Picture 1 (cartoon, rainbow, N blue to C red):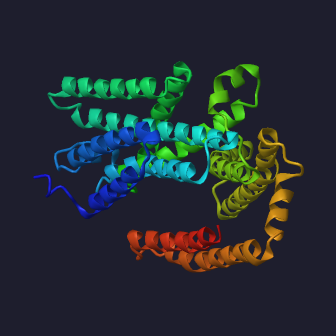
Picture 2: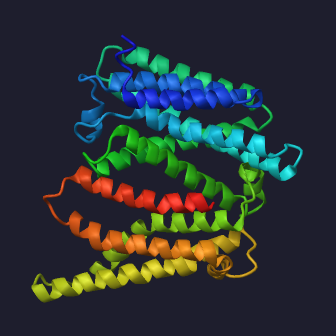
Picture 3: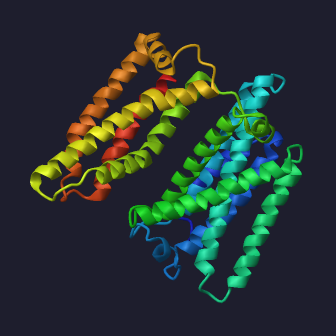
Length: 377
């Protein structure tokens, strides 16, 4: 029965959705309607995925014993963006041009997030049914969902150039599928489908926004296509986006630099050369990380935003301008990082420690760093 399918996690997510939908004004009816449709579809996919006969777990090699978490992950980011839209409408007047642009930007982010989640859900349905006799029905259902979603975008967002908008949303969806498959195959038995979907959606939205932000500055042709996706950011938003993107892209750069350095030097297999190899990798790591954070990231920041000074100097001035809060908060973060490195890193090298317990340690560290910053904000 339907009541038996209501677990504790699903009940919390339903309360989360009901609270958002009950607070949504009529102006945001398109977003509320699509969020409700996405939630129903995600719940049905999760119920089917949790069945023992479903092939999703074996197809993606998810973490054993963990629930799929598809319902939670599919509605978290779209629900968060709808909440942000509601807060923006309550706090600011739409007669203000800056407020209207901010609302326009948030609505676009919502539709991109919901398109990513919907595309992944359709892909999961297709995977779970592809070995069954009902594959044609599954294809028919998938195309129906795509058609319904496209019609929603056309009817409710008809004031925007539809070709660019739908192409942008479709690109988010395809990128989400590709990235989620890559994460689950690269880290087998480490995450559930829901966890990978949540991470994938966040990364795709983040980098998609960064691409639009950069492309709008490139030239006249790109401005014509990406101007409706562009929103003027503050200095803080630009710096955070640049630094986070640099840290996320850095592992790929480091991997290729290490491969190049190893090919350029012939290494004999002995203890001395192994130690030299590790030392060389450490030097490459720190030098390349410093180059990315000091030169590459600030260069991108100054390209997309007219900083009056170097972004790193701007950050230093921003921190020192309020010593009672910002400087103390940075010192607190350093203490938390030091404690986590000295304590938790030693535990992580102990093979006797359960992995789930180790994850909770790092969750605790993240909460300890996040809550004071949220209070100060």
